[in-house]
Image (tube, rainbow, N blue to C red; front, top):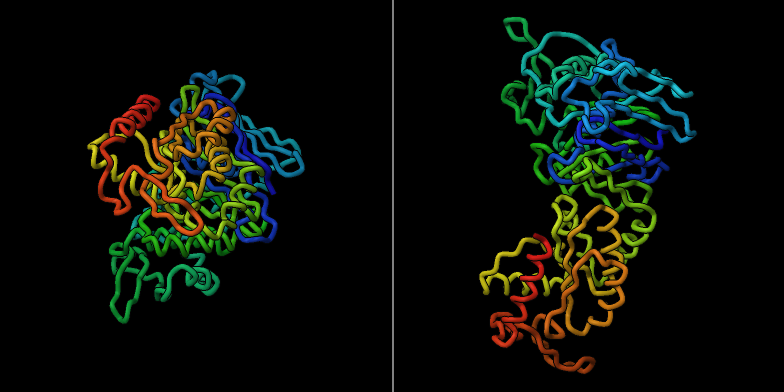
Length: 461
């Protein structure tokens, strides 16, 4: 098993950054490492680094062209893969400079490193020639392209290998696609081969098949004959997939990562798994700053916070799908206590025709008591611009916690709630910014509200 990968000098990595890899422990998702972050942040570069490492043992050795080398890093690339016993293998550009590489094996041998990389561009020619590659053949021929390729044509060679005995492949495929498609490889009259699908005696070739189905085939191919000790790296597994298929594929990855190391880069909240994180998996947010690409990874403290948040039965939505979306936003976030705050503050913004340069976190943080946990999680993931808007009766809480998070902005609304609440046997009447119908904004608070959101915009600018 492998402990971490270190990258410096490759594309945006002007400084050395490390990605700690999850170690499987037989629990669902324990070996899953999830990469998130905005576009053009460096996630695909990490995928490239894995591919470069695997290409050491290919027939065509990798090289780092000028466009791949970071000038700030002295035009030199270095990638280090370390196992759990602190042995490592180093792939770096030659000491003489230029694109050629050197490999240093420090008790970790290239032939023992098996990394199956599935890139995001998984299209392949619908008609292909006959060739059959085993998993080992794939590793031997998995070359590191000088440019990011738009095709995945080597997959057809894997198809012929699958077709020799497709039962195991189809067994895994059926966990995502139900009913299981009836497929085979056929040959056209001009001699080319293609995938033929039979749907109730209606036939389709691979030329007319949706990209989502073919994408699932390539991912299942990477999983079905994998072994413990392999690393499987998948760039954007969600591409061209309906949300229901994303859920099923995510569940399959959780199953396989119980005893394998799987790394995924994703823009989909359906592939964020709290269960995986609690069981030993990991999540890293990749961002691009002035000093280059940075990897911000959560640790045990944040995992403990997630565990406690998931155990809050009164606010089960706190870490729901909407909250997961936060990992795919850029900076400038607004945290509020609960779902009513999100609903009515958005309504107030609309009523006042305000333009706000920030996004709300999910449906609130599930109460002010969760604020420290949420802020600690977001800070660890590299978020720099966060505005916290709480009720007036939370001023004492803000005074304490703002000292811990001085880089973030704290605001209070001029009332003890966002909406009027009638008195109950347990609680007195509460005045809000809006009447209890939720429709009418009180004029006396308009100026205060405008000032709050003016501060938010100025802070985020």
